[in-house]
Length: 68
Image (cartoon, rainbow, N blue to C red; front, side):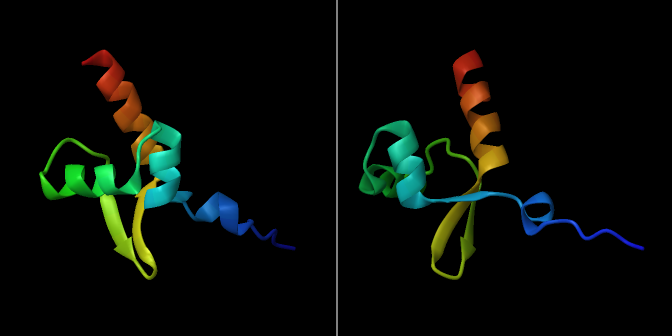
């Protein structure tokens, strides 16, 4: 008998732009400006419904920024 893995174990967790803005205490517009001006940001991927940021990438970025 095979066991099925849940979707959350297979698919990475993604944050919407608004979720990332809430997490960082800024507006989505500020993050758009950072992306447009090529300021350091976690990698963004364009998925249906808008930009998404992998939670793993966001956490890595936050750790890297604290060390800078």
